[in-house]
Image (cartoon, rainbow, N blue to C red; front, side, top):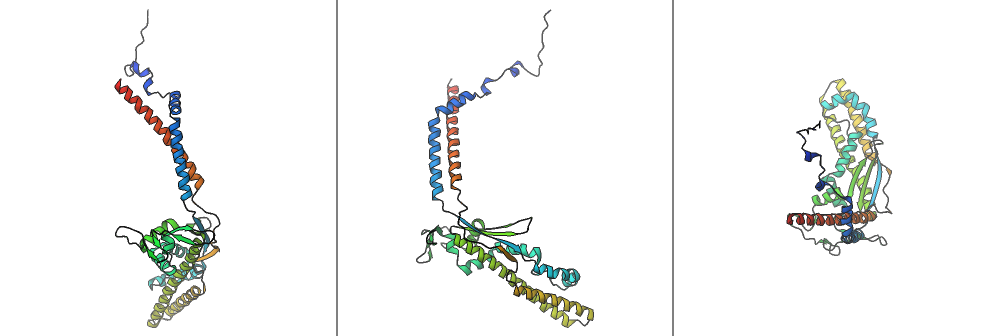
Length: 326
């Protein structure tokens, strides 16, 4: 008796048969690539040459950086006073932590990145041409040359052609965007708390100068802010002292005035008010970018991959047309 095998209705016979149309024949694939090898070689060569030309034409960029430590002298001086009289001082509208602590360091970093600080920095050192129009740095003479289509160095006039609302001379906001994105970088080490301020430029001399100026100016700005705030606190405390006749409150005011006076003295005497320089910026001898070898390698790989894709697309597109015609 012949036993008939019943197939499961959920799986038709075609399900178990391999679909040859969906399979990829690796030998055929390699054969297609080999037939189109000259197109791949040509595409790779074009991209490789283009990458070399692009890499050669890119100017060297140098980086100067300085390692800084937060000056927490003020925080140590005022921490005890803030805990003892912080409540009374806050009721009186006094900030005992003016000029000290981690918050002051964080504030200084944000001020360093601000438009107002950069605007003063731009006007003080007249760096707009070096920032926005520098084209090349001569390593022998140490001089910068400027793009004549952007800035006429001899007549000291901006010659670039831009559309409104931009002007031939870059505005402070436009310069600040370039400075923030392409020049300045600030990083804080979470383990040590040390801060690195770096600047990148065509000229290593300019980069080193800018980092040095930035550290000097941010210390001065934060020092002046603390002096103004502390003087305002002292004046306010003296006014409140004249208005009260309670001996205990007078004692508190005297102690607050004493501590604010100490803060003012320390602010006036300490040039490294917020940041102490651990390792100053130096003129870099080696460029940080461009990575010309990497550009050439990536350009060559991109050309090779594009060539392979073109060969495969051309082959399968032709195969589809033949199938349609058949």
